[in-house]
Image (cartoon, rainbow, N blue to C red; front, side):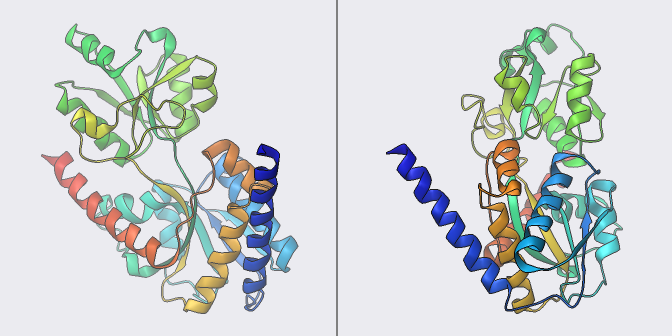
Length: 318
């Protein structure tokens, strides 16, 4: 029976892929599509973007030119994209946090949501508060006890939003964390392994170590339980009303027509959602599977994210 179900699921994904690519074929880009990538070359996010582009090229004949535009949590990419042609010749991949929290925390960035056309998300993050098992921290209560006993705890965070969440978590439990800013989840894992921090945020990269018993997810940074550690408390259970929900996001310059937007969104999301594709397989393995939001639903989510980000910034400043 399980084989039959898997076969039906694969068939459904294949049908969706053909349907969406056929729809996309009704529109053709005016030339090669510049694909701006807000992540360093060689990482999982960069590889995801390039695999999606390769598979669309193979199925539709479109041509993509990848370009890594990194730095400042995606803001460098957004600044480079703003004002570019909105005819489908320029798109970019970042995280939803770039268009919400990072855009607002910059203050003088000059970037507005309306400057961009959200296309589709591809996957979410398994954001957890992580510690090495050998540290002795099995639960967040152990962290609180260690702090009460006089230990000075170093907390690794790879973005301003995550640093603010760390601060609010400490504030809720009378812990003054030494928050260490690091560049990316891999840097947090390296710092944990080297003993440079005692705990830190992992956005899914910790999965292998957690499965091996080398690390533990102490807290879910999401609004829902973590897949690998469903018993880990949520931030809201620990007195923090905010969360680190987020997704990988394809976007384009603002003012794009619905026809172009829909064609691009359908082509990108159909590959990401197909576990039989190389990109979909990577998304399944590295990020727990596809999470697709597009159209009005995506617009509403980003508007809500921006509103929540403004509230978080205010709370962290108090």
